[in-house]
Length: 534
Image 1: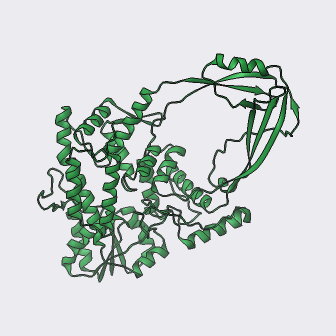
Image 2 (image 1 turned 30 degrees about the vertical axis):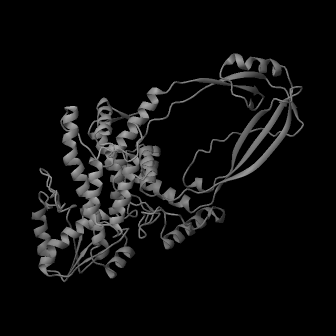
């Protein structure tokens, strides 16, 4: 018998269908060990962590250990990332006492083919991944456990928390709110000529209505001549397939799901065998699956919708073994309305990424009032000629259709009017746009984005209003106190540098304890890493 251990009971159930006789699949329900809940759990001199059994896990483990004694081989099939590697490490650490052979089975989707490959080609525990997880866990514990009390004392409020990525995320939200509060809306004006089927605008912006009056007087009774008609085609390339931040952002915008809900449902879809592993920075796609999806497009939509397999320039920290989030097949129907909607979004984006560009026709028409040749009015049009990838992943191309016009044509406007416009304040972050901003700044990783937003809401630092993140009074106070006491902790450049150094541990290029010590000392240092006022 071969014992196959995974984290989740759903995952165990799905894998049992593919492994068949000769295998026993058991689930441990996540980490069996962690830092203690009621104390620091880290030796401040050596930075050695004291991992202890999580509540209820030792009893569960004893059952798994008995299965281990009756097996000829143990395969650890936890998730293919730092967290999963650490879970496997703790299992290996305890099970090696049984003297049974233990190996790591790695797969990125739960299908018969991928499980077969993982079983046939197991490996040992990747200690660089484990050390990277230890580094993040210990650094987060030091920051949270040692710095949070200082914040609580400063504000005289219990229960406040400091977090490595949560804190700069709060700063982003607070800074944006202050920009909105400081914003003063201004009016400005454009002169437009209103014709039978379209409108054309004079290319001068007026700050006051009275400044536009002389121009209106010049053209109010004029006939207009078309002096230029320019047409050109524009190709809009297909979007990339989803990685984690893009899935979170798109599902938040299109399906109105919180990023925490997106990841919960995506993990369920993965564990039930419907999609690939949902925590990834990568855009690359398995070539065989891409060919399969291209053939499906060819069969159902025709050759004109078949794009091709694209290569993407990935960010430096993206793991080479990871791929995009895609379906394992195109015919599944997951149970549950929200889960089905998310699955369909992933299917649509995957097919779109392999399809052809959408094609638009742009038109620019220049008209001048006869007798006032120095004044040019412009009309712009845009229409969709070929939907391409957008047939799979709908997109609003904001079309404006202009009538057929030719050079030399003379037209009389129905009206010359002054159009009032207003400057708009910056928009508050949504959960999706906050994730995008954090990704652009190099702050956080796929496994952390959902937790960041969830923590900010649970701590009462932000609330969600009409889908937007608004800081509470407490959120303002905390952000200001953090910037005053721990400026490096909320500095965007230094937080991104933290992520870069932690990634180097994963690559085996940095000692994890030395790196954690260096990073934590810098967080406590009140000298700004990069002076950017809040």
